[in-house]
Figure 1 (tube, rainbow, N blue to C red):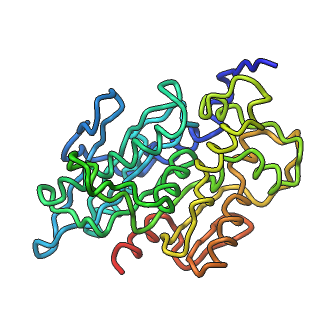
Figure 2: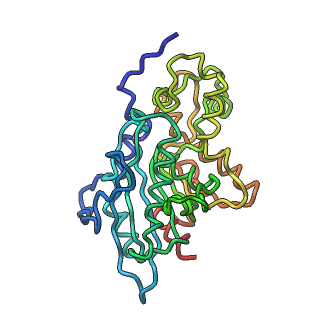
Figure 3: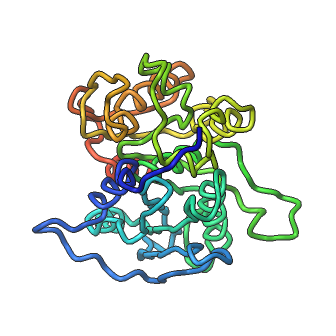
Length: 309
């Protein structure tokens, strides 16, 4: 059976989330202009990032926090970074970046994750110029941006020390990751297992993400391999980074009629990661109405704490 993918569900995997992360609300401060805007890290029009540099203390390199936008891998914008977040990070003496990456209309996984990694490597190749601390870098974002942040946090280093490309020699490892309504897996079979819904239909944004055009492909070796590789939790090892995950909805029941935007942003995706990380002695904080977290209280506070340890 051929699949026709409507656009109406676009907001369900991160577009609304990324907007809420980035729009200034009444009483919020105005977003400052970047020190460097639309800096290039590749040949595609979306291979750009913004950078807000902070004055260093005693000339020491500054930690860096990188914002990765959501949007279901089909939309989204680096401009959704919140002004209040920038202020909190800069008040702590951190520099901040916000990045674009190619979307699924340009190609399937893994281009999104590879773009984020390449952007990170590009920034690292210029740390001396920008006075950044290459050993204190964290990533955060909502939904799709959350998944990319976790993927970078857990994936083996993509650096190629023998490459003729100086940028490719740079590390892709980070020190911490934080997420809003984040996904620890992008595997349909894992979603079905975790929610106990064997006939759960996959979210429509995953069809272009995996270049799936027919329902039968979800059981193909090609797609199964991609779903495993795209899922951050499958890369988890005991040398990985601490995590903070925030959710606005409680642990609500899921069945095959549950709106896809509910289950794909479900707190269970954070709780399952927390369980897996606890088994190997890693820190994973989950915040939701059913699971209050009081040690840090926010993504910003968590990242500031981790990059000043």
